[in-house]
Image 1 (spheres, one colour):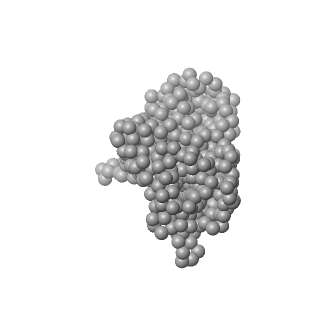
Image 2 (cartoon, one colour):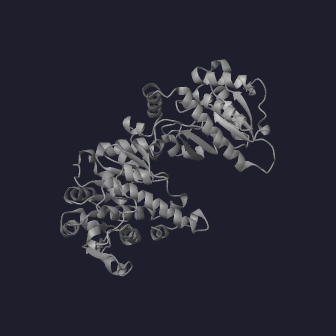
Image 3 (cartoon, one colour):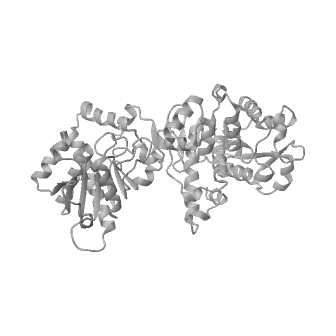
Length: 519
């Protein structure tokens, strides 16, 4: 499924109208009809058992969003509901198709009032429709628009937003003050990026994607490069069967060997989570490389793993990697012949670690996953933009704080436009970027972005990211391309979290190991 910016949506609309020849009035009619259907569904869910028509209040702005609301009012009335309209501006301000719908509503006798002429009796209605401001709106709502938004939110009535909640930025998901808090958003043709990013996703409520006559294939023709991960996207855009079926005539070597270099004395659990996750993801073999002192305590903890100890001077740390020598040589030798390599979970920091990472970046031939401490090493290395592109591909898996260090900005700035930042960073540095968090974003060096919608807040727990890094490494070991492995990895990881959460009594009780076992 494609997801679009406001400008992409504008181009899709214009092309459909001008080149394909579907009149704009037809698109508005379709939008209003599906909006009315969603309003009826919300009204039925909120019905307290009273036998009477649903009473709906439509808040209409002067643009096409208001026109959509007026069409919905007509369809609701035709279905036996009571529908009334409150205009934010004088009805004479409406133009084009919206004015046409205003006149039709007048002729049909649909009751309407101008906001401010008389008080809005919110208690008379069961459902409110937000048709005030559409995707083209920018900045904080003002005047009557702001007042209506505040009153609607305070009314306690469920709100259905037309296309996007008024006050929400269609591109970034940022919310202005005030902003509609919808129970349901009916977005037309394609989801808007702002509905997929927080805090916009919270304000949108349940999002229903409603076709209105714009051909989906047109998004590809006009160069839309953002997608919501689902089975169709995996098959058609990523050229991947997400089930990864196995042939009968196969063996462990068929599915590759992953090397995980991770863990330290205080964080050996991160290494085990990542390495076991690589196997759970389907890697045929996995070797866990750890400092020598950790080998004996880890023996048998995961019987399916192979363990490799590296010189550590008895410290249980990775500090021996900081300078050329036996430890560094041993690790690079272990990486030879592997189908994927993961560095970072629980590794800790040590003197010379950035120089070691640069050496490994250039020497390791397999696809490379950098997570956790390896990302902080990368951020401190300086001149990362000038490092050579790795032919086999590189996957970076930062959370917002790590992303902030990599990009040289604040975590707040990262969260303001996760999709835009991830895309520009991946293209600039020629990497696959997995920006973790709610609605994890996967961006490829080709500019394509994939947004994941599996997962839940219970996954915000220590070790969850270690599991994800291991899953991606395990998928790379099976021969998937970096973007394929990253996208399928976050999708499976989130789905496993959903299965594991369903078994727990509360969202705060989920453990990373339970996510791992649900893979």
